[in-house]
Amino acid sequence: MPATSVVRAVTALQQGTNLSRQVLIRLLHLRPCMARVAVGGTFDPIHDGHISLLRRAYELGKDGDVVIGLTSDEMARESRTRRVRDFKVRERNLREVVRRCFGIEDAKIIKIEDQCGSSIYEDFDYIVVSPETLPMAKKINRLREKRNLKPLEISVIEYQLAEDHVRISSTRITEGEIDKHGRLLND
Image (cartoon, rainbow, N blue to C red; front, side):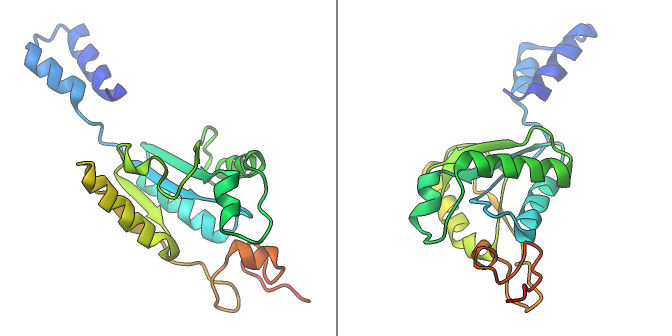
């Protein structure tokens, strides 16, 4: 039951409003007008592409709820040959970036063990993805449909490009090609 709906009902009662039982029940089940947004990733190392992804999520979830799914260690490492920091380190770094860039002190970060995370069974309005993860967002919507859940509105951010006009990626950063802002590094 959304907190804003409860507040509306309690306020009406405190003001002596004579509400019928049906009206009270409807008030208690009203969905708040605030969006609930899902975004996920490994976020290691965090770069300008991640910042763009998070910025869009916080724009859509303004005054709402943004849930950041951070991949578990197992998930982060199963498809990569490069080194990935431990979950706790990545979570701490992500919280610091969200605090510094968006002024959010209590970012909602959850551990995800698979590519869908909680987005296939929780109530979300949006999912924010990059072009690389767009196919997964479409799969999530197909899985939600099978569960009779409304589809998520998919918001795709554009790749952030490095100075060489190739997309910024964590792999390129860890290989020493570019920095987190896409500046080319001298060999």
